[in-house]
Figure 1 (cartoon, rainbow, N blue to C red):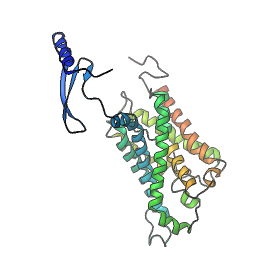
Figure 2: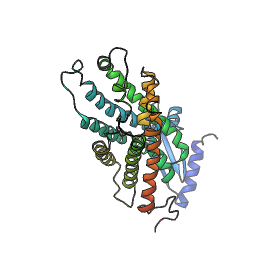
Figure 3: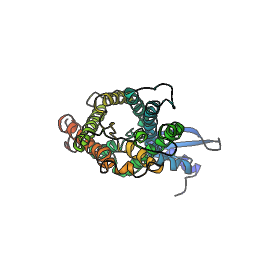
Figure 4: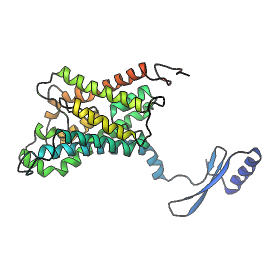
Length: 320
C-alpha cells in the first residue's frame, strides 16, 4: 500500500475534526536532517516510513539488551574472580587482590549493572531460567524465548572472552605457557568442591534459583512490595551478595545457565578442551543448567500458589 498524499491526509483531518477525533502532529528529523511532518488522525499515523536500520533494530533491541546484560554480568563477576585467583601467585602480583567476598561482590555488581542496562528494554531477565519462568507464569511471549536465550548465552561467551583476553598474560604466568586447567577455568565457569555429592550440588543450585525466582516474582508483583524499575537492580545486588556469602561456597552459585554455559563454551574453544564438559559426569548440564531451570519454575510455582493474587495459570480469574 502506498503512502497517502498530502491532500488525502488533509481530507482525513477535515473529516476527523467534526467527530472530535484526536488529531495531533509533531515534527521529527529524518536521516538527512530534513524536517518531516507526522500527522496522527484517530488511530492512523501518516508520515515518513522507518528506515531499514530502524526496522531491523526493532527486532534486535530486546535480545541485544539481554546480550549486553549477561556480558556485563560475566565481565564484572569473572573479572573479580580473575583478580582474586591470579593474584595469589607472586609472579603475577606482589600481594593478593581480594578474597571470596570480593568475588561475590563482583557478581553482585554484575547483576545490578546488567539489569540496569537491559531492564527497561527487555525486562532484564539476563538468565534463561528466569526467561522460562516468566514465559510459564507471567505471559512472557514464548515466541521471544529462543532469541532471548541465544542472546544470553552469547553474552556470557563474549563476556568471558573479554576477561580472558584482558588477563591472558596473567593466566599464562599462573598456569604455565600453553597449560590450561580447572584452576583458571573456575574463574569463568562453575565447579563444585570435591566432597560435595551430586545430589547436594544439584539441590544447592535448585534452592538458590528457586529463591531468586520467588524474589523476582515478588519484586514485580503489583500487589506486593513492588519496586520501581530503577530500584530493582539494587534489590538484586543485595540478593546476590546474600547468595554468595550463604549459598555460594559449594557450587559457586551459577543460578543461571547462560552465565555458566556461555563462558564454558568459550573455554572449550580457548584450549581447555573437552574436560570442561566431562567433569563429574557432565556436571555442566545437570547442575548449572537443569537445576536452575527447575528451581526457577519451583520458586514461581510456590509464589503463585500461596502469595500471588493476580490472574495467572493457577488463578485464571484473579482476585477482585
